[in-house]
Image 1 (cartoon, rainbow, N blue to C red):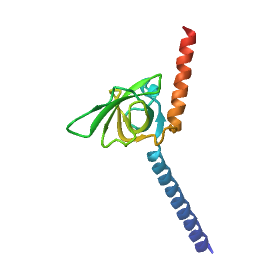
Image 2 (cartoon, rainbow, N blue to C red):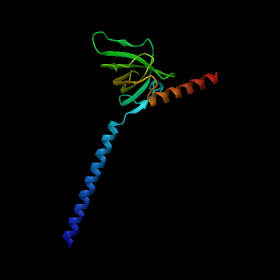
Image 3 (tube, rainbow, N blue to C red):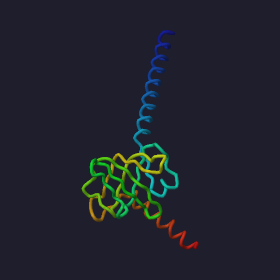
Image 4 (cartoon, rainbow, N blue to C red):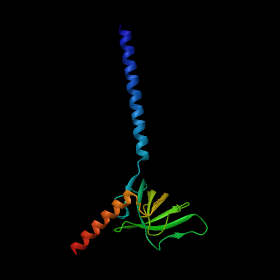
Length: 151
């Protein structure tokens, strides 16, 4: 009788330990895959974490795209209307990448204030803008409008 209780207790402890381990591994995996979105004004105002993978988006500022003729390196400024940040990327840009168009990048914000993207996504038709970018631009317009009304 006592042996059966011990077996059940060990089985219960084994199941609970396994479930706890599985849950903790799932939570750790999810935390590593979460990319929080920050607008250029949030990156400039240092609200975004440094050296942590994040997403950022805005409009490519006209006249700021600089391509390295000997590599796939490109740098450009991205804005939401209230803040502007320099983005550096090495790779092939999407076909729809253009000045004045909306982009979303994934990468890390450097301690030098530059967003180092390892992935760039461009909008896919003339009417579409990523929701995060649209929200960030709307918020930036509200901030700018608030500053103008105070002056």
